[in-house]
Image 1 (tube, one colour):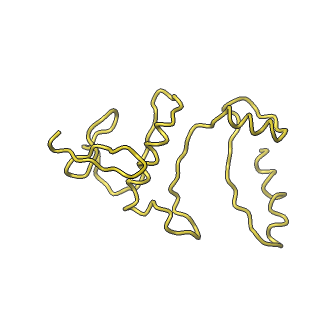
Image 2: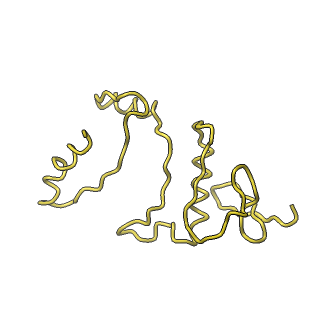
Image 3: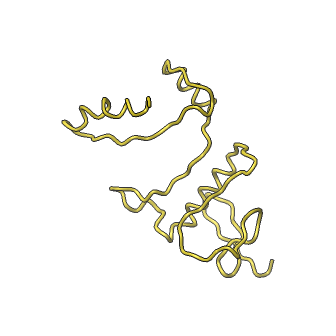
Length: 136
């Protein structure tokens, strides 16, 4: 591993990188396929197993994309950087039960974040406009 160096942050384990700046070949990843300048990273568990480790690896991807602008630097619009993960069904059921909501079977519901207008008059009609969309 003499041609390897390590990249790290205060919050994440270091990841081996070659001197060319690309991660070492591991699992399904092979640096030979690196040939463009896109700023997208995917980390998955190909067995579909839920794991905090995969979330940690995804956050490290976001940290490693900071040089491409994935850093939350535009507070007015956001940069689109984020993490998509499996639904924590047990947690969602607990919260839904506390709110008196009966959830459908696992995999048949979704969670979303909606940004509504903060001020009247636009905020007054927003819920009645949006809620029917979710029931279709």
